[in-house]
Structures are given as C-alpha cells and as structure tokens.
Amino acid sequence: HIAPGSGAGTPAHGGDFDAIVVGAGFSGMYLLHRLRDQLGLSVRVLEAADGVGGTWHWNRYPGARCDSESHSYCYYFSKDLLEEWEWSERYPTQPEILRYLNHVADRFDLRRDIALNTRVGSARFDEAANLWQVTTAEGRTLSAPFLVTAVGCLSAANVPKIPGLEDFAGQWYHTGEWPQEGVDFTGKRVGQIGTGSTGIQAVPVIAETAGHLWVFQRTANYSVPAHNAPLSPETKRWIREHRDEIHRVMTSNTNGHPFNIEDRSALEVSEEERQRLYEQAWAKGGLQFRATFRDLLTDKAANDTASEFLRAKIRSIVKDPRTAAILSNIDHPYATKRPPIDSGYFEAFNRDNVTLVDLRAAPIERITPRGIKTKDAEYPLDIIVFATGFDALTGPLLRIDIRGRDGRSLRDAWKAGPVNYLGLQVPGFPNMFTMTGPGSPSVLCNMPVAIEQHANWIADCIAGMRAKGLRRIEARPEAAERWVRDVNAAAESTLLPEAGSSWYLGANVPGKPRVFMPYAGGMAHYRAICDEVARKDYEGFALS
Ligand code: FAD
Image (cartoon, rainbow, N blue to C red; front, side):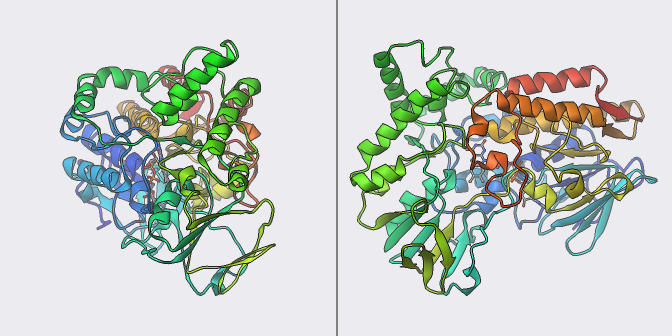
C-alpha cells in the first residue's frame, strides 16, 4: 500500500513521491487534496492509525465531542462539501465528526494515497539528493523532496508516570487512545484522573452507568455550559444562507470562531450591567463566553470579574458546600488554560455515585493492585480513566527521530523549547513544513481555520517554487530567532502565561521546557504576517 502509486503526476526530482505527509487528520487530508488534486503532485500520506480522522479517530471516550460549533468545525474550501453535509447538533459528537472526515476521504478520493497502520519512526534529510528519507516503524523507507508533518498538536497521549500502574489488577485507559469497541462501566468502580476539557466531558457520561465514580482533581477548572441541542431546521437554514458571512468572520478574527470578541472592557460597565452580560453569555453557553469583553485575556482585573462570576456559578450548582469549595478553588485566571465547556459537569457532583477527591489536599502516592492510593486513603477501583491530556504541540514531532542537515536532530534543536519560523519551518530542516505545531496559533484557534490556512500557505509555497524551478526552502536562523521572540512577546502581552500548570506551557509533562508554545497574536494577524512573507518572496527563508 505504500508503494509509489496513484497520485497524479510523477515525482519531478527523484524520490518515490513529490511529498510525504505524516498524519491523516483534518490537516493531512486537506493537504493531500491540495497537493495532489490542485498541484498535480504525487503524494503519500502515512498514518499510524487504522483509519483516517486523527483526533476523532483516537478520542472515543464517553462524552467526546467538539467545543467548536459544528457549522464552524469543518472545511470551508469546498462549497459542494459544505452544501452536502448537514450537522445534526450544535456541538458534534466524536462519531459524527469521524463520519464527516470519512465522508471527506471518500468524497475527494483520498484513501488511495493514504497508507494506514503506518507509523513514521524517523525522517532524515539527504542533502546531496535533496530528499527526505522517511522510515516507518516497520523499517520501510520512502523518499520525497518535501516532508510535511500533519501529526497533530494533541495526538501524543500523556499517561503520567505514577508508580505501580503496571501492578493494577483492573483495566486502565487513556482517553486519547480509547478502545474502538468501547468500555462498559456498568456497575463498575471507576477512578478518573484529570479534570481538563476532556475530563469535564467524560464525567457526566461515565457517571450515568458507573457503580461509583471518583474524580481525582489536582487542578480545579472553570467551565461554561455548552447548552448543546439538535440544530433546528431554522438554524440549519440560517447557517446555509449565511455561509459566506460566517466564513468571513471566522477568517478575519482572533480565534477562528464564528463570533467576534465584543469591543468593550469589563471594567467600563457597571457591576449590574456586567452581571447581566455574563448571565446572558452563560445562558447562551459555549466558548463565546470568553468574548463577552475584549480584555478578559489581557487585564487581570477584568478577568477577575469573569473568574468570580464562574466560581459563583459552581457554588450555586454544586449542593455539597465542601465539594463546591474544592471545585471552585481555581488557581488560574479564566481561559488561561484551555477553557472547557460542559454538558452537566458540575451537576454530576450532586449524584450519589460521584465523589470528588482533592489531590491538592492529599496527592496520589501510587497505584496499587486494588486501586489508587492517595496520602489519605486507598480507593479500590475496577477501571482507571486517564483524562490527562497530551504531550502537546512538540510531543508528536519529537516522538519521531527527525534529522535535518548534517544529521542534526530536532530533539537537539528544540532541547530548550521549540524554535521555528512562523511555526512552519525549522532552520536546518530544509523542505520540511510543520502544520499547526508550536509557534502557530493552532490550539488557540478554531482549528479547521488554522489548518486550511497552513495547508494553503504550504501548497502555494511549493507551487511557487516549482513554477520558478526552485528545489529547496529553508527558514533562516535569524528569522526563526525573531519569530521565537515574537511568539514570546505575544504570549507576554496576555494573561496566558499565568496558568503555571498549563499544557500550553508544557507544564504537564515532567522535564519538558517551560515555554509558551502557540502563537497568541491572533489568527487574523498571523495570517496577515504569513501572506506578507509570501508576498515578499518568502522573506526570512532561503530559497535555492
Ligand atoms: P490530528 O487530528 O491529531 O491528526 C494527526 C494524525 O497524525 C493522527 O491521526 C496521528 O495518528 C497521526 N500521527 C502522529 N504521529 C504520527 C507518526 N509518527 N506516524 C504516522 N502518523 C502519525 N479543536 C478545535 O478547534 N475545536 C475543538 O472543539 C476541539 N476539540 C478537541 C477535543 C479533543 C478531545 C482533542 C484531543 C482535540 C480537540 N481539538 C479541537 C483539536 C483537534 O486536534 C484539531 O481540531 C484537529 O482535529 C487537528 O487535526 P490534525 O490533522 O492537525 O491533527
């Protein structure tokens, strides 16, 4: 299946293909379509999983759904695709998104150029031949002048190294590597570790069937209700009739969502008005809560007003005052960690079969054959669910042994944190593009918008090079240094670095450098910078 093949055209400059793409999620699939069907390149996509869909193939945990609204969480590159696909709910479930991505794979005949069950273990740039030699975990090597990593930013599961896990007599699962056949919780004693976006989605659903669910919380979190519901025929019609406008909003604002941030300060309105606006945003639900005021992420005093509103909501929902106090004892400003939205998370703690365990008061000491042992007690369990997130952004790239010019490894180049230009290229690694990785807006954005921008920029760049007979593009070190400074400055101008335990900073993985990784300057601004660089003949890149 990974032999040279069905892609249009023949490789122009030696090698098995014109381009090798790693990953068949939203990113890799669209890039394949752009490079193959619009540029006529021969392309091979290598995908570790046994199906397409990336995130939505792997994350099959109970309650898994998207926090972006369905009409914005999809490709916009094809009007026909937009017309023929109809979402059923405001926030689509994992199975529905996976169906959508499978539909895309069929609709654009992508499968013939995707090799499934093919994990890339290493990639080496052969400078003399100007080819990337990409080797699979099974030891097969393929070559192409261009290598694009579409490996995802939340695809390397992070299972904390808690002593004793190997001795646990029950079953354990990470939410991001959930078994395809599902897990039966009926009557079981379940322990869930982690209360981030994933954990908050999983709790209410696991609680429905579990005998008892213990939720082990280290970091308390804000959450806003999703108010998910089926899309009414009127809403569906409205979406259909306003597609161009929706797309214009999504591609011209900070976060790629189909709404703009209100242009008013939380501190310029009266207390009464502020509460009214927060109540209104709470009733509407979803990530748009963040957009109630323009300064929630830049001014601590403004943020405090939102944080306090949300803490009060927790206290009003959760009946047991002690549980409510632990859930609302939040140590970071609102939205400085990935802000979750939920469907009955706090309400779940009012059930008799759900207990919150405060790990701040009594940390986990070890896992025993029977269950989880904290400083205070041992909790006997049948199943442990790790909702502990990912080695984000850099993890999926550094799990591959990538070597650029002179055999230099990416792991070395990024020892002190990721260094790249525009989040697109690393100096010393010619012709390798990274999609939605560190240094790009990625996780701070509604991601399909970021993905289409990256794929379009990369495809246009390769097309331009071919038109001019150029064969190599490499980020200049000084451009990358400048970009790293810009990425830091963008983060520093917000409250985002204040969440000390955030995975945006790499803080969830022991030993990982503490660097704010995504570009916080906003998607629209980032797009303008990338366009300007391209317009100036790829300023900051060396082309030959
Ligand atoms: P992925 O979908 O992660 O795909 C990457 C693929 O690369 C995977 O299939 C993986 O198997 C493959 N791969 C990785 N390494 C290798 C290797 N070495 N060899 C071969 N294959 C490899 N984004 C939003 O905008 N809104 C949301 O509400 C939202 N919710 C999310 C909820 C969850 C639970 C998670 C985990 C993520 C969520 N995201 C959300 C982010 C989501 O990851 C992106 O929206 C999008 O799916 C990313 O697509 P991708 O193709 O870039 O990466």
